[in-house]
Image (cartoon, rainbow, N blue to C red; front, side, top):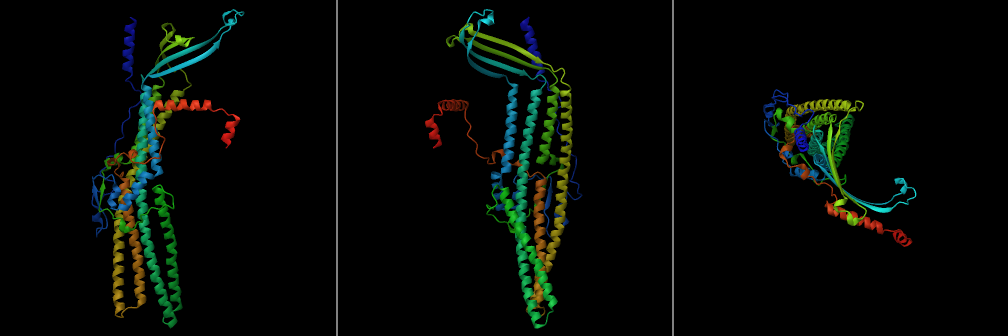
Amino acid sequence: MFHKNTSIALAVSLALSGCMLGPDFKRPLAPKLTNYGQSNANAPASALAQGGSSPSLLPGKDIPGLWWGLFRSPKLNALIQQGLRHSPDLQAAQAALAATQESAFAQKGALLPTLDASFSDNRQKTSGALFGNPGYSGSLFTLYNASVQVSYTLDFFGAIRRQIESLNAQAEYQRFLLEGAFLSLAGNIVTTAIQEASLREQIAATEAMIASQTRQLELIKQQAQLGSAARSAVLAQQAALAQSQTQLPPLQQQLAQSRHQLSLLVGDLPHQAPAAQFTLADLQAPEQLPISLPSQLVEHRPDIRAQESMLHASTAQIGVLTASVFPNFALTASSSTIATDATNMFVPSSYIWSAGGKVLQPIFHGGQFTHARSSAIATYEQVAAQYKSTVLKAFHDVADTLSALDHDAAELEAQSHAKQTARESLSLLQAQYGVGAASYLQVLDAERLYQQSQLGHIKAQAARLADSAALLQALGGGWWHRADLSKTIRAPKTPEKTTLQQDIGCFIHACIDQGNSIDTPATQQENNK
């Protein structure tokens, strides 16, 4: 009868072990959109501007994993690889991912029985007063005890499994944070390289403009000495030259800051600036830009996936707290041997054992469990709202960059037209000056206008490059086509892992060394030396 009841109880336990209380996580549905809020989002952007000044958008095309390769710059590729291997921010994100993964692995051990062994050696003295005989002097003996204990918590209501589910979701959160950190790093390196290239071109154009204005000022001074130019013309030209000269130091300062920023991004000190120096000729604007479908954006954005993982973790925590108000079942068993003589420890008469079960049912805890579960539900609602906010921001990011690319096309077209017009005007005046139909002052003024238009064209080129990178970054950066970052990032060196026997051996040797270390006057004197 006893064995029958035990079998029934075991069957019920196994049946209940598959029960997991609390809500099951369901992924939020992606917004049902056909475009990113732009009426021309599905049309090639090159149709919006003439002269091929804008890239063609390819709706429904997937983004390559190495999206920065679309700029066709070996210097940029090498710099991003350096940042991938040496950025401390990525190494910190990788360590955080490893920590959460190990926590999840550690929690899985709670589903298995635990086995512990212990040994004790106690020297004891008893008194006859303990037995009602004060005249008896007692006895002195040594008690040896060796035992093995086994315990197992029956996860009837899924509290442990929900906790494992939550920790796995937190590990996923850290994984997508790592992907997001690398996406931000690559995007920052690209935009900083574009900024450096733009600044170098602007500095060169500004220096050329200053040289042209200096020549023009010398010519006006000569004319003033000959009486063919007024003093006011000299002052006006000096003011124009001084105004152009004031533009140069801020550009040079920004260039130095860009170089320092690149050093920071790749994990170097400011004086260790990258050897590569960028100009606009080193960066080619992508002629075609892939645009993933709006329904895929929630799958591709690392920040959305990270927030989704937090939503999963908060859902599992509701299950953990729901199960906490139900009974907790545990089984324990132990086997020991007790003897007063070490040689008799393993004789049959020295063995003792025990086995039993424990049920813990919370009854009254002052509303602790109720309020804790309500707090978990409120946390879930908070994370759900944050998830919606992240999704909205992602769609707005893509819409903003698409709109920026359209305006970049119009601006680049206008700047190209202005530059072409200024160049033609300069060429015409140079030809007229050669035959005496125009003054040298007119030629210098045309050079100044051409250099100003060149500055505008440089800024328009840089804006197009930066917005192309921003679009690829806003669409997720193609991380799903890359290898696992945790296997690529070079982390700081850590102590070598050892086996359990090596750890025990090191512990024993450390104890022996500590026991042999006696502070005698001789050793103290030697240590002081």
